[in-house]
Image (cartoon, rainbow, N blue to C red; front, side, top):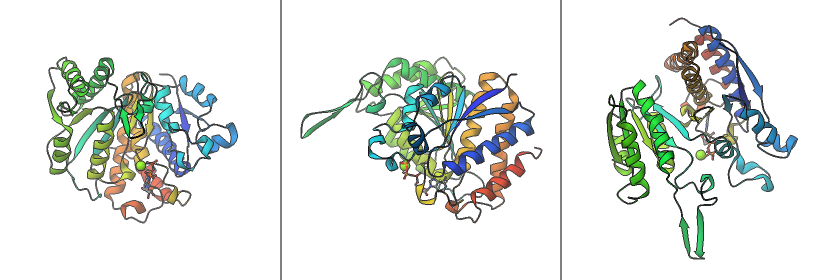
Amino acid sequence: MGEIELGVLHGDGIGAEIVPATVAVVDAALAAAGASPIRWRELPYGRAAIDTHGDSLPAETVDALASMAGWILGPHDNAAYPAEHRARTAPGGRIRKQFGLYANIRPAAALPGIHALRPDLDVVIVRENTEGFYADRNMAVGSGEFKPTVDVALAVGVFTRPACERIARVACELAATRRKRLTIVHKANVLPLAMGMFLEACHAVAREYPGLHVDDEHVDAMAAHLVRGGDFDVIVTENMLGDILSDLAGELSGSLGLAASLNSSDTQAMAQAAHGAAPDIAGRNRANPTALFLSAALLLEWLARQRADRRLHDAARRIRHAISGTLGSGVATADLGGLASTNEFTELVLARVGRRG
Ligand code: ATP
Ligand code: MG
């Protein structure tokens, strides 16, 4: 099995702390699992790249990413860039669009030792990442918002059947590896053409997976069910509803510092924490690296499937166990009410990654 080259993009704020910590944890997990080491390639990105290359996402970074199966993306702090570099689409969004990373996978599961509003929650939200009402990401229409008069604004939502079908397929494949339950979330009662097509396309694809239990919910009902409890497994939904529901689910399961995400196409995947650059605590050795550790575990699992390499899967499992063990032992960073610094927390996770079991 050949060596894998992955990109490393530090980004802004706490990225300088949590990204190197994540690389160290992945290296240790691969070694413990007996997998080939990864060849990491650092690429300019974010505020530092504006200073050195005049662009927060330089062309040389885009060119390098094009040849890679995956990468780890640190957070960006678009709001802090000089005005002429403050793009309408932040650099993370530009990467997603450039590489057509259409599937956003956002698990929400409570971890040991963490006070969660829903300690029993264990769901994965599969969010369509390229269409819907995100005007700046819509490939088909350029800008999806316009004002026919000063007092009237229109927003176009784009839904295409191929995009609905491919996200449904990702969700079905995932559900087949979990508790085999798929819930399609929509608002087809008010948007019968657009979300109606999303709903219909998801059901059509799901019929190809007879082993799955499939149902659907309106997003408002789903929000209530998530808070009250209910046995959901994989939830597939369109872009904006997925953005909102995944924050809700993330918060119910713990905190922002724990919320992982993976953005993928059929050929590439990007690990990215759900939180931002947290400039208020940057450079103070206080950031919680857990969300990015868990995002990297999702990337390893994606690579494991792609390359049919169980050792990559084992490495991911080791990262998850090490995080659960560390948090379960009562060690936590300040955002969770603990006393551990980023470095102390990382060292404890590193020590557990290599343990048996
Ligand atoms: P964005 O627009 O990029 O989402 P934001 O300002 O909404 O940025 P964050 O940068 O995620 O959000 O920060 C929100 C709050 O959560 C801040 O107080 C920040 O310190 C805290 N926070 C976010 N991520 C972490 C983390 N990994 N560890 C500790 N605290 C964090
Ligand atoms: Mg935010």
